[in-house]
View 1 (cartoon, rainbow, N blue to C red):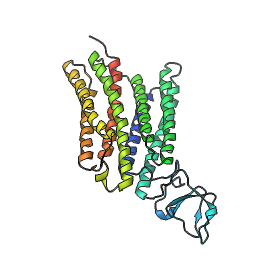
View 2 (view 1 turned 90 degrees about the horizontal axis):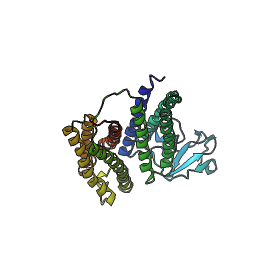
View 3 (view 1 turned 45 degrees about the vertical axis):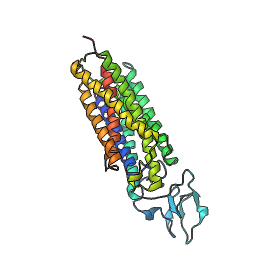
View 4 (view 1 turned 45 degrees about the horizontal axis):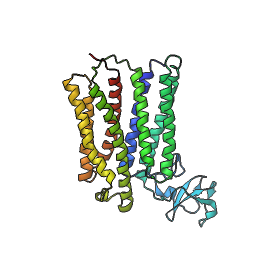
Amino acid sequence: MKSRFPKIVQIAIISVYLIFLAGSIVRMTGSGMGCPDWPKCFGYYIPPTSEEQITWKPNSEFKKGFIIIKDEVLFVAENDIKTESKFNKNNWANYTKHDYAKFNKFHTWTEYINRLATVLSGFVFLFLIYGAAKFWKTKKTIPLLAFAAFFLMLVEAALGKMVVDTNLKPGMITIHMVIGLIIIALLLQLKFIVSDDKKKYNYNSIFNKLLLISVVFSLIQVAMGTQVRQFIDEQVKLFGFENKEYSLMNPSFKFYFHRSFTIAIVLVNFGLFYLNKIKNLGYKLVDWIVLLIFIETITGILMYYAEFPIGTQAIHLLSGAILFGLQFYLWLQSKKAVSF
């Protein structure tokens, strides 16, 4: 198991980024409330495929916990029942966690696939902590990092439930996102520890300081970006998902901060690129970081000026998460650099 552990760590990192991708598609398509409950979906383990399944009708069977929509209100079956000719409210309880009572098959299955990605990642993390436990006697840092990442995955699951129960309450999604980035950082530190990369890098104090600033800046930018996205969600609720031209109408200060802060991020990271080249420091990740910043900037411009072309939101969010991961891993490499 010890020899396979580096591969398990890599798979765990990929699985978390797949969750980021699935989550970004959920946000892009407005599918966050595709399932009104958690962890089931309308009370089903496998979501409904038609509105008929969640609509009350006479002489039909519903199992305990199934959710229906009637008169634009959610009701939960209190027991296994077979309906009569008329709706008997005594057999049903109002769903009280929120009042979102809409069904869209596409949104439901988009959200469900997002949850499946999380479940699959959970199984990967079980293998991760099992493999990490083998290192307890030789290097306790490995199991401690693995268990910390697994614990935060459980926290993420609980937050996912809270996000749904509160109908995408502002602030919850930001916390959800930031904890996801912390999990990425823990896994990357694990990867760095178990990696057999023996390459030596040159040390430069200015580069190291700029790099730490870039990591902090990216974390701030991602957190602020989720706040902007929450503003967009509120606009969508007001004007409808199809009216994207209103998504950034009269934006708040957070949007302008998020947009203008990009300038600082570009300057800091191009400073890293410049120092890496002229000082011959040997960090290949810097080139990828510059590419991702370019993608982030272009997709941000397209979303604002071209009314959110399809896919740009998902690319913007995922590339931001990958950017943070590469910067953090580069920082780990720089910490082990030696002076010449």
